[in-house]
Amino acid sequence: MTALNKPRWGWMIFLSAIILGSNALIYRIPDFVAMTPEAAIGSLFDCILILPLAAYLLIIRKRYSLHWIVPVIMAGLAVSWLIIPMEYMVQFHYLKYVVTAGMAVLLGAEVFLLIQLVLKAAAILKDFKTQNSVSFFDRFEQAVSRQIKTSRLLPILSSEAALIYYSFFSWKKPSQAPNIFTFHKKTSVVAFNIMLIHALLIESIGFHVLLHSWNPVLSWILLVLNIYMIFLFIAEIQAFRLNPFVMTDQELHLQVGVMKRLTVDFKDILSVSYYQKPSIPDESLVFDGMPKEFAEEEPAIVIEFTHPVEAKLLYGFTKKVTKAHVRPDEPQLFYESLIRKLDCN
Image (cartoon, rainbow, N blue to C red; front, top):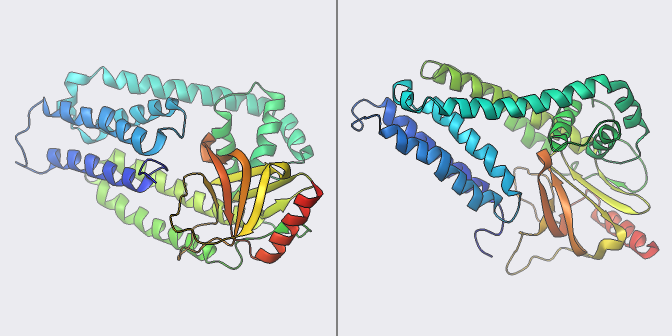
């Protein structure tokens, strides 16, 4: 397995921190290097070329649409405006119009879609309640697409709607019914996410105070992102509770929090077996159906498919997988139920 077989988010975060951190420091440590207006060219080169190239090689390549490189470049431009002092950015004043134009187009498209949603909110809500789909994401997207023209922003909007729904409007008891299998009760996933929320709360206050004296704009941006992440972790906890694995008459639904989900027809399942640790693990085409917790547990059951199927991730990202690893709270019951479903189909 090569390093490019799966997204390397850890390496991407590490490289981003090194590149952006070093560029920020050279402008703020006195006499660190001899500063000239041309120094900003090197920083811009890092932000709008090196970082997008790293994102392409480590994250996007052969996994997601190349269109995702555009927002990465726009983000690089925006970050460069924050870390490079204004006296060095005067020579590149035209770049701020590129960032502003890109943000205006994206914001305008989102506002236009939101206006349509507000105007047809009653019809969408009525349609949403009549949908039979197990997943909130699918129910929302189907209801919206029936009422307004489908947009590329719809998966992003449905992700945001899911975060709001699970964070604020989903405080109810989970369903109890046959062919529903929980996967969080015998894990530490809830405690793990609560720990992350606690850490973010402390970090948000301390880091905001520390950064505010250096760069107020950046400190407020990071504060907003931290608050957003807190709501994301709350939504994760609620989604774990309310979205167990579900077997209908025709399909198997695997949703793991709000981050990833997979729906597969029973006819597309090749085999089901108990997990045996391979000598050379290959996770490039695996749907990881286990939530992250303190200790990394091995899966209990492996589900192999007859052909690559599409798993859906947050914000419209997708991934082709050929097998799924799951660890339900009752693995034997899940295994036997799934075998019966396959025999019937």
